[in-house]
Image 1 (tube, helix red, strand yellow):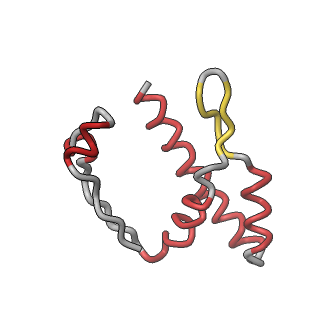
Image 2 (cartoon, helix red, strand yellow):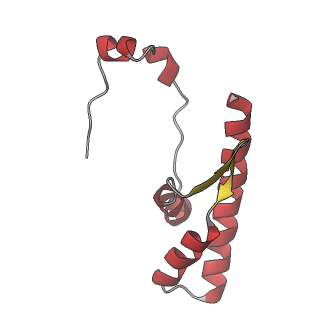
Length: 97
C-alpha cells in the first residue's frame, strides 16, 4: 500500500529534512525475496540491552521458520540469510550511535 511522503512542514515539525531520508536505490533479487520479507517481519523482534540492540529474538525466527514448513536444508539456508542481514543491521545501528 502506498503512503505519501511527509510534507516539508511535517518533517520540520519533527526536526528532519528530506535529505535525512535520501538513500541509494537497492534492487531486490528474486532469490532474496523470501529472506528479505522474513527479515522485515522480524523488525519488532530485536533484543535490546543498555548498549542498544544485541540481536534478533531467535525463538520468534524459529517459530516463523516452522510455520513456513520448509525442508531442513531450506530452513537452514534462510536462517543463514537472516543472520547475515542481522549482522549488517547491527553494524549499521552501531555506526549511527
